[in-house]
Image 1: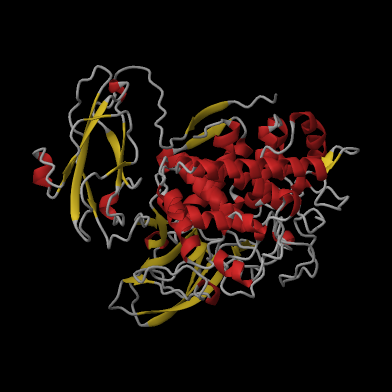
Image 2: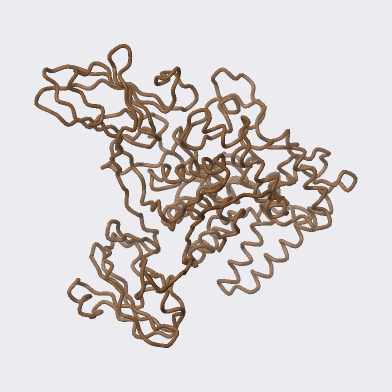
Length: 639
């Protein structure tokens, strides 16, 4: 086992994990209160008329035997222990999460105050917690609440005067932001402002390629005004009917790190120019990581920051080019977000988005929706989404497309227009297509690359697709758990039987015994990395076959995209191949996370390098897998 010295890792999910060295500093009352899992509900609106309350148990209590919650209509009532909206009474329970309001529904657009006390291991009540304020919105049924946005005023970290008299400014990291300038001009004039993500020869690259952003704007300045908020121009792809609509109060946001100011007088002071960066609520202190491996440390920082920076839309979007929620992108984003911060609202809102809006076309993307709901349940313990969307989640598993031997296939005669509309497609003519990985071979994305080898490891697409059916097996396991939670015993058994049947069929019909690996589909003799890593990641491979399958996986290297790398890492860690996973995670070649840092990005890319996807963007959270792989698998911190 390779030795990696870890100085610190702190990551906190719903369960509060803390090291105790003395009684000093112990919490004496419940703390870290949340409403609907939101830590700062006074700055947002709660959209559930019967919200759930959660809290952390004070260390000195050791164990919670009872709780009592007070919800009040005024701060005075709360301070005077008067729960005029709801007084739970003394409830014998160790539960400290998802305690639902026990009174009638709250009123819309109203401010409330709540607090809680608990009885400790000796059955003695603590004092009440601090009062937490929250306000309701329109109260749509079980609708997930939106956490609030922070606008961070980021200062220049480096500036210099360049040859033509212009100023070059570096804000340290790219962010979805606008620009604020404090500048007193002596006369009316026009100054030129350039913003970008990428450098070329020490200056902003004005033709960066792909979807790497660059913009030039003209700013009129006059002696009467000293503060300017630069109006940027929206890209058409960010505002089409598929893109997430930003709040009306938001200016146009552009991801940029660098700024050049041309035409300013000598009175211009670079330190008075700010990157106004927009983030959804994010607590930097929730998680931290440092090790003896400086490359791994940089990768962690890159990935964690990517998760923070891409919260700007209030949903998980695929990056700057489209700003559209895609199911697989969202799942990877969710895993990493849950691993670096106690923030669940964006994932829950994105899950609801997938049921309220049009589905995207890839087969496997549909299968990621049940996976998102499952992770939300595992991390929060909340069952609302399971209850609300159970029947529609069954459709997302594609179980209606079962053909022979328990396999599913998009070639099923049931994959018709009626089914696609039920699935949530924009129209009955949109086709469901197996994707395996992205981009595919030879797909033209413009730019200088006329041919791209793709990221599918030359996958041999067949009527029965191994990768798709690996996801389907995993979905059946998840659905059996959902049915059990909802006490649908017969349905739980049905899902278990379907899972057993598909697992047997995969192992009977898709395993090449001679070579010791799994082929890409029924009738194929090609064994891609993807077919093998997916089955290993989802526990389809029997122990007796794992050694040979792992040998094959290791022979393929990083023959997958940044998306596929999530499942490759999971497969390796679950199979005892931590050293090899670590080797891939800390590699420095052009198919590595470190390469993203090396080429100058401060967020993860959509692809390993621009040569592998010529229209890629530089702010794609599906490339941030180490943010969840390090805590979840290197450390084993999972709910």
